Amino acid sequence: MDAPCILIFSGGSLGKWSLEAISPGDILVGADRGALFLLQHGYIPDLALGDFDSVTADEVKQIEKGSRSFISCDPVMKDWTDTEMAFNWALERKPSEIVMLGVLGSRWDHSLANLHLLRKGLEAGVPCRIVDAHNQITLLDSNSPLMLARSRFANVSLLPLSLQVTGITLQGFQYPLNDATLTLGQSLGISNVLLEPQGRIAITDGLLLVVQSSDAE
Image (cartoon, rainbow, N blue to C red):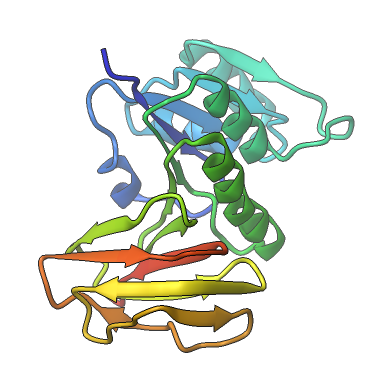
């Protein structure tokens, strides 16, 4: 039996679009206010965890009662954010994929920290992606190429997460690259577009953020 996909719903920007990511058999994890969001839209979290400092006392009771499993921690005496706690829990279960929703928002310190979790997933060999209303973000290393299909995220941008990424080769894109190098701070990889039904991205060294985005409201 294939390992399930784990979806983490956090307390950042969430909406109807995030519910469309749920498929039968997925494990649903609500981090702090993300658990309340799931309950309010008719979904039972398989796990709700966090310090729950962004919900009221009555909402905490609602979350605890409505979730299959509940883990609460002290908001002061903890080393990880609620999202990282959920991510570490998910990694231990070796899922087929981890999808993080509601992990981007107005708090850019949290948003960037959550982007860095993609590296932890990569090192563990677990495919991971971050999705919001306008973006889908993955992280690529040299171990295997990334295949992208056309989707509602029409634009594809490449941004180094390491100081330098070498051997970047793109196939199926409007602006192809062959054995190119991107250095942290360059914008050369911004706003490419798939011309073929499927595109291929490969690198030989470094860590490359692949940001698929849409301008649609």
